[in-house]
Amino acid sequence: MTSLTKLTLKAALDGLADKSFSSEELTKAHVEAVAAARPLNAFVLETPEKAIEMAKASDARRAKGEAGVLDGAPLGIKDLFCTEGVRSTACSNILGNFVPTYESTVTANLWRDGAVMLGKLNLDEFAMGSSNETSAFGPVINPWRSEGSNAKLTPGGSSGGSAASVAADLCLGATATDTGGSIRQPAAFTGTVGIKPTYGRCSRWGVVAFASSLDQAGPIAKTVEDAAILLKSMSGHDAKDSTSLDIEVPDFPSFVGKSVKGLRVGIPKEYRVDGMPAEIEKLWEQGIAWLKEAGCEIVEVSLPHTKYALPAYYIVAPAEASSNLARYDGMRFGLREEGANLTETYENTRAAGFGPEVKRRILIGTYVLSAGYYDAYYLKALKVRRRIADDFDQAFEKVDALLTPTAPSAAFGLGENADDPVAMYLNDIFTVTVNLAGLPGMSIPAGVDVNGLPLGLQLIGKALDEGTLFSLGGAIEKAADFKAKPAKWW
Image 1 (tube, rainbow, N blue to C red):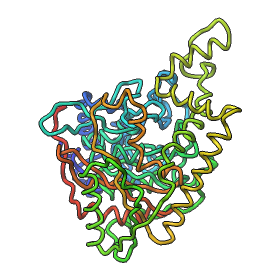
Image 2 (cartoon, rainbow, N blue to C red; image 1 turned 180 degrees about the vertical axis):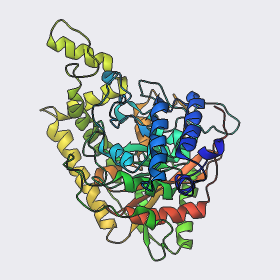
Image 3 (tube, helix red, strand yellow; image 1 turned 30 degrees about the horizontal axis):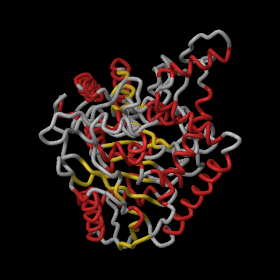
Image 4 (cartoon, rainbow, N blue to C red; image 1 turned 120 degrees about the horizontal axis):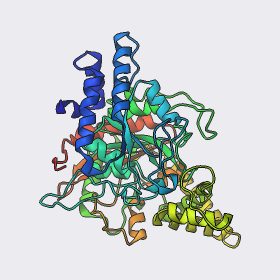
């Protein structure tokens, strides 16, 4: 049955529809794959009994002719999404064994459409990280390895478990979140497709908050079409989230395969950064050539405030994190460490519950929000953010989308940047601008580096224009013909 796990989501749904196999068979094959892949540490909680139960219910619905658009498809859920009756921890000790009594809107939408849950996926603690090394459950190991080496590589972060599980054929797709690149960078590191939709396209209700004005849910999938199918289910207005957009959800899969002839694609000159590896530059040029061949017009554009994006992001995101994470105080849920008085109980609980990276960001955030520094740092960062959004607005007057690399390198070794937070933060150099401006961004696997590791290209679109990204992404996917898979070692 291992061949069932190699299917794309679209092929699996077609197979279920023509009764080539049942959801129970499909789900059992994935449950076995998940159990066999524990060395990857992609799942922090497996739910095999629940998965089989959901699969049987799906088969019953299909027999009655009541199948939903995702009916019977086994998916992995990032452990940042609250799942009713199933432990949800954000991979932090401070949430302990928290079991929500409610379901996040995004996962509720997936279950409404018939999807099956295989379990909860590993991530950087509270989604704070670029390598999945800050998780309380330990790092995820990328299924890919450099040619001729057994060194353990990062799958990227924070959605490392989501990306690794899709790349290793443990699930047909996975939910993920992106605050500064946490869908797109792991997708690039694992040879998968990841899309961060427009801010407000997917509800944030029931998703553990990191930085509320930046966080956005999206899928990681095997193909551009699979990502479109998943995003269509995940999206939609939600009255429980005040930032959720009350607009119709387009039929995203219908955009895949559409002609891109005549589209104008911008190349931001500021993304040609010093020290960028030659192979990333080469891949970018190759992407430009593919889009030209597909009939696109290539236009150089300028995003002059790009160089300020990373510092602005690392002020805004920690400030919001500092505020959001104040609720973890040992009083109502999760971990509680006793102290001699109330203040000591707070201090002991937070000291024991949060990991070093989360503490670092809370401290930075609290500092920039403090009375003497609010204007100098936080307010200034918000002004820079506005300028970055203006840069994109001006660029999109001339072009329909932008093409850039997704990440400045291929996957690096676990522990390689662990002692240098700034080196780690630089992984987000091409991705954070998109979150600051609330725009959609997508990573498509487009080639491999000299060591055989996957590299991704990023498309950035106008607000609410994910459709154009799916059309362009489909064109890049077709031209790149990326068929590489990690050699199984786990």
